[in-house]
Amino acid sequence: MAERVGFIGLGIMGKPMAQNLTEAGFDLTVYNRSPEKAEELGEAGATVAASPREVAGNSDVVITMLPDSPQVREVVAGEGGVLEGIREGSLLVDMSTISPVVTEEIAEAAKEHGASMLDAPVSGGDVGAIEGTLSIMVGGEEEDFERAKPLFEAMGKTVTHVGPVGAGQVTKAANQVVVALTIEAVSEALVLGSAGGVAPEKILDVLSGGLAGNKVMEVKREKFLSHSFDPGFRSELHHKDLGIALAAGREYGVVLPVTAIVDQMFEALMARGRGGWDHSALLTLVEDLAQREMQ
Ligand code: NAD
Image 1 (tube, rainbow, N blue to C red):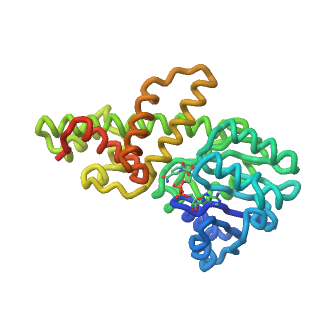
Image 2 (spheres, rainbow, N blue to C red):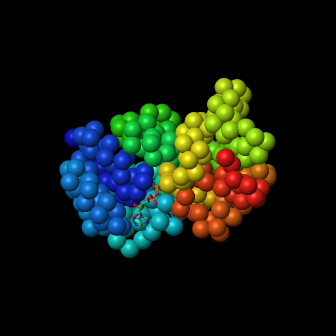
Image 3 (cartoon, helix red, strand yellow):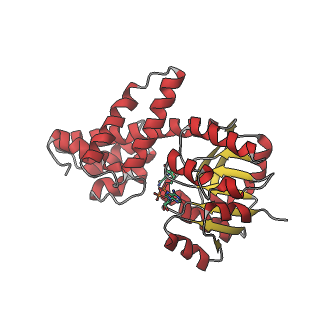
């Protein structure tokens, strides 16, 4: 019999991911803290549950896609949470980006209930979630990975088993370091070039063709050029992810000096009230520091 799937957290990422699972024919039960988003999936054929516990009671595999470690802890292990409803042999799949340490803690709690866990954070942004082309990096046991693979394939294009529980989150932290530092580098290049009289479009066109070319320039091009920073990926979430990377670096004894600077840049962006803007809005902070707008 096909697995019954539960999905909790229907935000920018979770909603289209859940939609792709419904479209692939999975029998889905959903829950979101603000119920309107769950209702929309209800109209698309999913069962709407009243609590994470009810989702777990209805499902063989429970997926969570929540903002950060405290929300995953609350939804899984809190009152009315997943663990209250989960059955022996069920599989919990956390696709949020959270701390690898909290991941291991939750996997242990799931084990006590006879359930297993995968951490399966994603990259590819809202566009990848909508198009079902996410990159999914998975930590956990091989047999659990094989069990969840058909679900991952409905949501993503590149699905990789990277190691034991927690390894998915470590890989995601590495990914977030590269993306943040690249946004900062592109922002500095744009403000520098524009101050020297070169049009930002030309800078992006020319740099894209050489060693400096990167996906940030391609995917965030319109946001940079139009200065419209609707998310996408919120700056406060990227700040959270650099915190995860810095904490992991501290734990493993790895120095991450430039990550620390960009983490502080995001802190400054949030202090200016721009935490809800797309992470490409780091450009506006570089502009503030230079006291000139890119044009
Ligand atoms: P979001 O804020 O849009 O969505 C989070 C959802 O969780 C919301 O619908 C919210 O109502 C729900 N929620 C929050 N707290 C809850 C609780 N206690 N109980 C039940 N529901 C609760 O965030 P998002 O952009 O969809 O990101 C989700 C995760 O995916 C984050 O960990 C983020 O870092 C990661 N991520 C996001 C992107 C992106 O481009 N947006 C890309 C890759 C990874």
